[in-house]
Image (cartoon, rainbow, N blue to C red; front, side, top):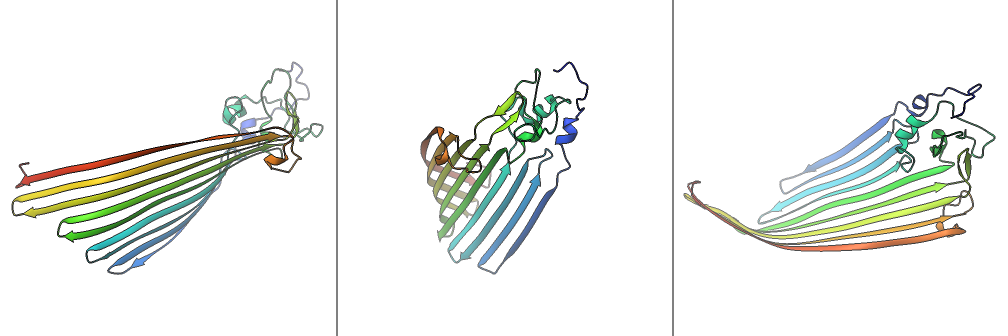
Length: 289
């Protein structure tokens, strides 16, 4: 740390970086139906600023649910789709972003027009410490995450005889996220970035569950009989992709524009599980098996 503190600021970085955050949450729904059919539709929106400057989370979700029954046939569905975006805090820095704020020296200048980027630079023994205001400036360092999720349940059922039912359940769900980090040239004293860089990661998950269930449940006087036989199939798939590069013109956020260190990679996995289910139950006056 510098020994001569004359003319240096006395910044309270917690006071500078923390704020009172606003959260907005809105919901609207419609439901209705009749004797054989009911439905529910809902739409929601949330926007929440983090208590640390530079952080934000936004989400919109949609749900549709319905049930139908006529005679021996019934069917229904439940569909939920969500899309969210967020501005995550820098996590690769020492102590995480919260710890970084706590470690920032009061004598660190908030702004310095003589530095590239316009923020004060670290000095002395302030090694591996960013300027907290600079790292949240989206003109210098941008971090975005987008997530899309869909959860779906579909079913259909037939009751052939009183107590004898066949039911099929289909439950696919999907998950996709995209993470982008972009940085331009800046100078923060002991920590600087002398070349533009861009990285993008994508994760995708597809899961499918299929259940076939045949059940029987009936009571004859003091006798109760129930049985279940089923077969299920579950298929889980995952894919990961990443691409990185450096040296693209400022403002051009395309990996193909990188002039050096352009790399990419990825992998995928798959797992499948099949199951057979069987169960039988008998009771007499609800006391004996």
